[in-house]
Amino acid sequence: MTAHRDFADYCCELLASAGPCTAKRMFGGWGISVDGMSIALIADLGAGDKLWLKANEETRAQWVAAGCARFTYSVTKDGVTRDMGMNYYTAPEEAMDSPDAMRPWARLALDCAMSALALRLARRSAKGQSVKPKVKPTAKSKAKPAGKAAAAKRPAK
Image (cartoon, rainbow, N blue to C red; front, side):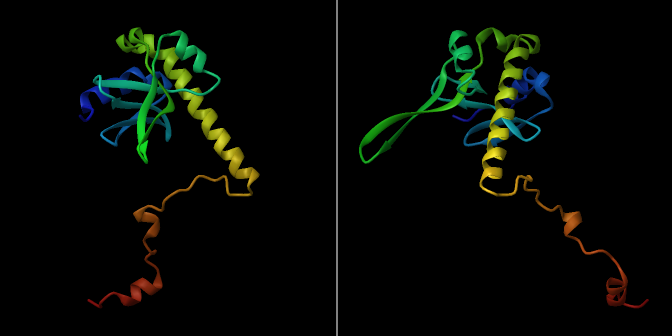
């Protein structure tokens, strides 16, 4: 079952203290980002749509102490099924009630996203790769300027 847009919009409202949130469709659910950094997912792993917030090894204990479940899924390969996990945890139930209740969890998820970005950039730098973000050219930047050459190709009136 796919996650609903209304729930994605509500989750963006809850997470607004982390910054302007953008929800995009992703694999039957939603990805929520702030400034291009993924801070949350919305997915139905069998118990209905849930908000899953970004975590990392340093914050795992906080999520577990709050009774949050880790994002896990099963993969079967060559007849062997393995449980896999991602560094996302369900939002605490009480945090789903209001943006104020969500504020510390939204900030924690944003901090994890910022740490992940810093780690990726450090790894790229260590490999001698460019650390500048890849920016796709816009249609405007692809267009050729209308200079003398363009004017010469225009039909005469």
